[in-house]
Amino acid sequence: MRELNSKNLKYAFVSLALAIFANQIVYQGSRVIQMNFLKIWDITLPIDYTFPLVPWTLIIYFGCYLVWCVSYIVIALQEDRKQSELFFSGLMLSKLFCLVIFLAVPTTSDIRPVVTGNSFFENGIRFLYSVDFPDTPTNFFPSIHCLLSWSCFIGVRGKKQFPLWWRFASFVLAVAVFVSTITTRQHVILDVFGGIVFAELGHAMVAQYDVLSRTYTRFSSWVMKRLFKWNSIEG
Image 1 (cartoon, helix red, strand yellow):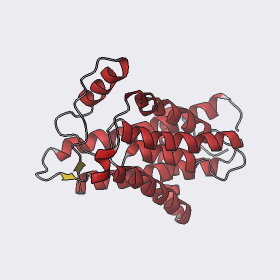
Image 2 (cartoon, helix red, strand yellow):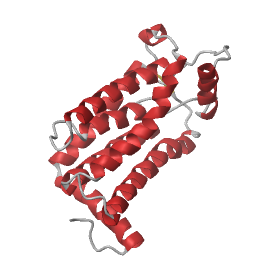
Image 3 (cartoon, helix red, strand yellow):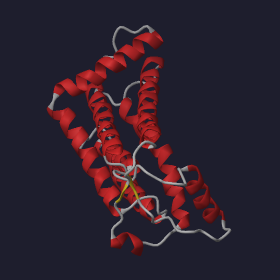
Image 4 (tube, helix red, strand yellow):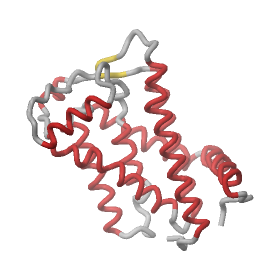
């Protein structure tokens, strides 16, 4: 890991901010455009109705936001800055894939149940449904929750500079998020697999085509220069 000096920490937090900003553009921005769509596709399969609602898994569903932030910062601070740029460019490309799908083929599902209990977690589920576009929930496929969680695992997978326990924990937490998206009835099974596939595709493409990672590097360098008057983010 790089030294925790002012420059490296600023780089890590700007990388985090760019990732969060892109996420909001993809998820929330696409919703505004979708208002003009006449057709939203229901991708629910019969198997999706067999999964139970497990309210306490809301902890995982919301807790993963903290996991993503920590993972982004740790990956940004790794010693090899090139690997960090590859990760964030792959993350951005996979989100771009999501945006295209959200706009071209908006999806929904009717799997949200009526929650009648008054426990802490049941109230939490009702809150989740109320804030996440309750009338016509869209942007089901692919699941961004699953895509981001699997991306965090891809970012450390096979990299010995990260401790084995961290790599293993990243995998376990990604799987836990997959389960939570199903057991909170926020997603269906196709969404989970879609998140994995597009995460893998985005990171594979930036590894194959240098122009993709260079594009992100130039953009992030431009942001750093405007914010901190740096001529380069390298080093």
